[in-house]
Length: 171
Image 1 (cartoon, rainbow, N blue to C red):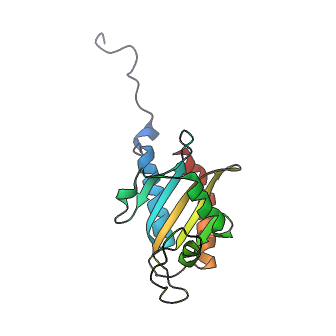
Image 2: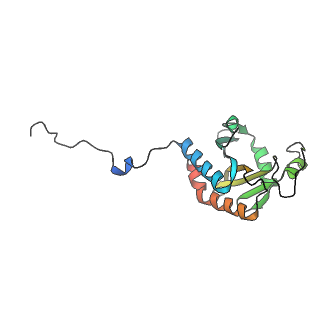
Image 3: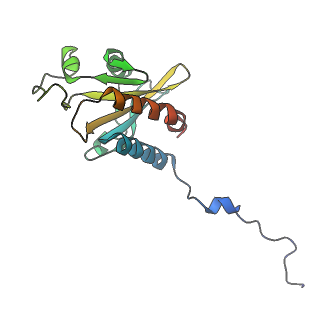
């Protein structure tokens, strides 16, 4: 066959056609949505340290009315003050609205409706580390059940963070 090519054209490997390629932003968005839905929160964010500026930046958001925060920068000292003041459970940090107000981090607002009810100024976060280096946070807000996170939920967040930390930091 004189018209046949001597070498067959290079084809994409068969496994390359099985899954679409995702951008880093899409990968973070999917991970964050999975965390929020699995753990029962309406809103979530990933905040990562930027080596060039020394600040932290919101790089991924999930939930209503969160897009305004995307690419917002936070002062490193402010972020570290939140992390250091919070109650610790593994990589998880919980900082109540009352504790934040007591430290002057937020203005005192309406009182909590009950002892276990979530307050709009409560803060639940999980620390993302690369070895000993503090690289960022996964922040969860607005729990579907409307309650302060139990120890069991904090343990689940700890496990999720440990499982996906490397993937989040690589994106």
